Image (cartoon, rainbow, N blue to C red; front, side, top):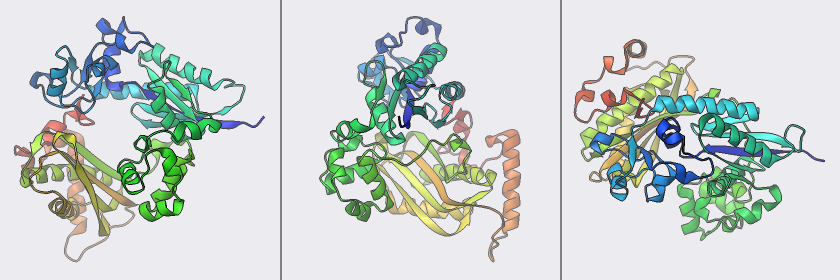
Length: 420
């Protein structure tokens, strides 16, 4: 009998909220693995005292009352005045995440962490170690519940992309485990709406509006040449996905691979309407990205700016390619401001900003300039980095970070943008 690899994606349900509920004795005792509504109506959000911030995670009980992720906390409280609101504890969530990923590796040695609350795995079937794929998935699910009291949802399929797609179905399936076998993939996949096609983002809207594709099956009927003409190399990827094909493999060392780019994002405590305030946030984020470039001994040639508008809806992501590689804020900041000037309308409120640098190379040598003292600037930032690493980010700041628009002092006490 031919052995084949079965791929799976294990996803933790409402991870941040589940961590909070599982760690609180008053709630943990009455929870049941297969009864979501034994959870209290708890949400993880910004500052409960000021009723500010957005919902980062919500238990199924809270979601049943209409609460959803990314909703403003004030709006959520109007929907359900009995919500239990807790501030995020990112250090705790990361500790739990590391332990869960280790459990996944113990059950499935061929494993790849995908995010803080998700991980891919793969195993040969049929085999003596895994004679029953559904039972193998249940073993992992049970271990996670027994050890952490967190519900895991597992989707399996003939490749990673199908595993991700089947995982979305597992979240709505009793028992929380779904296996899409290879012969059944087309019939299960092609009836789904095109906007359910994972990984496409805005490309799904283009497929719907420009190609008239309502379902994934409609996408599969589009000639690959037309897709490549419209989307470039992405056209080939979209074509394969629409047929349930994916050539990517499990990479157990994915977190140790060289970075393809660095980015930093922050959600602002209020809508910013003034150019000078947005510029302060851009500069602070750029300083963080450039620090990470220097620490990795890399420099980049393309810089990108992402802006999200009021109510965290709409916005843009635009990038510019430079003539040479650099890790200097002085080189990159004017490019970012040019992107903002060109693509921001000047009056819509800005609620989140992201700065990224990619097209990287390792800094094996220093590219000199006729106009700048590059070695002196390198030494300056080396000194600044040393001070920050020893005494903290706020030990040495730009003056603009002390203005009302500055976010550095607030962000310095957070992990992943949230308080520890």
